Length: 519
Image (tube, rainbow, N blue to C red; front, side, top):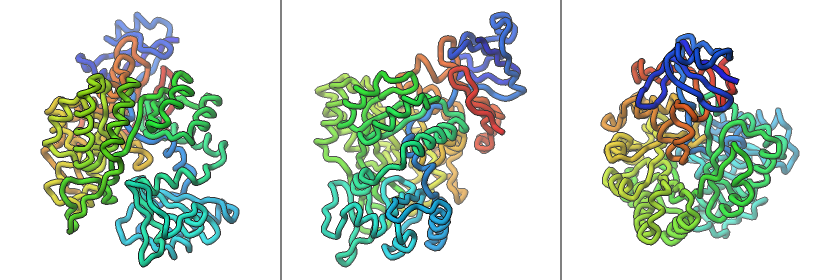
């Protein structure tokens, strides 16, 4: 079945940037060119009149957490809940509506306030009969009420795992956990019933598609999630392409069980975490935070553990993604990478990725380029938490957050992401952030790191396909590539950069089929 697209701007992202028309046949692009040529080639076919809209390659999510995005659809959102009273109101509203049985776990997400945090007494009042876990929006810390602490056998004497913290005050638990402590205990919390989770996975895909995204990522698969993936595949619920990254211990099993399981699922490599969150003040820094004292955050892995993961990736000839927010974490990653590449030079060709790279120093970028490391920037941090970063790091450091222009000048093929569900996977907002760098308060933060719109578009198409080793199949509109498209209400290259986030996604096409239409 052939489909002819015409009547608008066709942005190819190739050297010849524009075309008048495109013909797709089944799940591939057949040809791109003039309308006259494409009509002659298409013959009797389905026609899509763009009516002045812009067709371009589907957006590629360079980093998010698909499973967490799905789980988020079953959780209470505390986004914008600025007071304890508002948190309580939303949780009570959920309890009243859903009526979970006493002892059944309740989960909330998107808490995004700085200290002082809710007390244990307040947490207990939110859900007096249910174990309650509240995820901080960063995903790196959270809160447990007394019933949850008891269910997980956490006491004031419990030793936190290395690279994590279980907070106590005056010898008593506060309910606050961060980094490896929070993440390790999350694995012990019972998952929602399978049918609910499978429905949530479908809802999550619809959300990604509504933002024009056709390839997504699960940026940390643990062993406990493998049975869910088998169910996803068994029900054939994946309609977007999914690239999954298990932790190094889970990788062999995931590759064996899921490596060739579906056209829509691919094990992309391994994922490790080297530090925490800048807005949560757990990112690992070379110099102290601006809030006083010598506090610099902390790392979550030893050098030996990082090197072992890199060596394992090299031996398996697979990609390694490393979460690094602070410049000390980036320094650890680069130093370890340099050492391991000395023994395993093939690692350089496996396109290792620094994920987030928020506070990388400009002095670290040449070394990243020399070692073949890519950087996937969470550039929307500038808008969502830029004002907080100024308080945490001062103007000089915060203005260099997500140094996209400097990385491009070093020849590093950068990508952008939203770390969903940390924020919604809104690519157009991210493009606006990269080009304009405005904070919520309206300040331009790091004008010298603004980039042209075309470079921002490449970060979520051409470069993102390259990050996934899929540049032959995705990222541009060319014959033989996958028929993955997004149709936008306006051409991003023909409007002021300040207007980018006003563009609407009209349709999303995956493998030649329309999977989303704006209502």
